[in-house]
Length: 286
Ligand code: C2E
Ligand code: MG
Ligand code: MG
Ligand code: MG
Image (cartoon, rainbow, N blue to C red; front, side):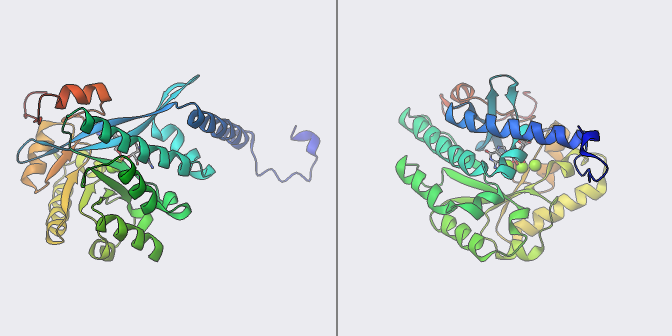
C-alpha cells in the first residue's frame, strides 16, 4: 500500500497509527449501536464516612456489555466516546439511568445514599448540562440531594463563564458537586475558592503510597485542612487496605471510597446492602 503511493507520500500515518484509527472507527460504530441496543449499564461503588462507617454515597460507573468483546470498562471506550462526540449521548444516558435508578429504589421503599455521576468536560461544551440534569430530576421525582455530579479539574482550566454558570445553577437546585481526581490536574487554588463545589476527591495516586510516604501523608492532610477551611468535605479514592483507612481517617478525610469498603456493585447487590435499612462498613469485616 505505502509503496504504491510513491516517494511523495508523507507518511504521517504509520501502519500502527492506521490500525489504531481503524480500531477507533470500529469502536465508534459499536458505541452508536450500543446506545441503540441498550448495551450500557451502571455499577455503583459505595462511599463510606470514616468516623461512623456509614455508607453515605454511591458513585455511578458506566460499563458496556459489548456483544463481541465482552465486558468493557470506561478506560476501554471513553476516549473514543469523547473524541467522537458520542459522550453527549452517553452522558445523557448515564444521567437518566441514575435518576431512574434512584426513583426505582424510592418506589421500592429502599433508602439509598446519594448517587454521584461523572460528567466529562466535553458534556459542558455541547449541551445544556444543568437543564438536562434538572429535567431528569423533575421527570423522575428525584428527591433533593439524591443526585450529585463529579467534575474534573480539566473542566476548570479555561475559566469558562458558561461552565461556572452551569455549576452554580446545579448547586442552586440542590445538586452537589465533587471535584474528582484532585491533585492530578492543573487547577489552581483560585478554582477551589471560586467554585461551588461541596466535595473534594483526592486521587488514588496519593492514597496508594500513604503508608510509605510521609510526603503523601503531608499532602493529604494539607488538602484536608484546606478543603475544610473552604467548607468542603474530603473523600479519599482508591482505599484498598485497613492501614490506609486508619491513616486517612487520622489525616482528616471525611469519606473513603475503594475496594476495601466496596467494589462497584450491581443493582441486585445494592438491594442486598440496603434492603434491611442503613448499612455500615465495619473495619476488620472484609
Ligand atoms: P473515577 O471517577 O475516578 O472513578 C473511580 C475509578 O477507580 C473506577 O474505575 C473504580 O472502579 C476505580 N476504583 C475504585 N476503587 C478502587 C481501588 O480501591 N483500587 C483501584 N485500583 N481502583 C479503584 P472505572 O469504573 O474503570 O472508571 C474509570 C474512570 O472512567 C472514572 O474514574 C471516571 O473518570 C470515568 N467514568 C466512569 N463512568 C463514567 C461515566 O458514566 N461518565 C463519564 N463521563 N466518565 C465516567
Ligand atoms: Mg468519579
Ligand atoms: Mg475519581
Ligand atoms: Mg480517580
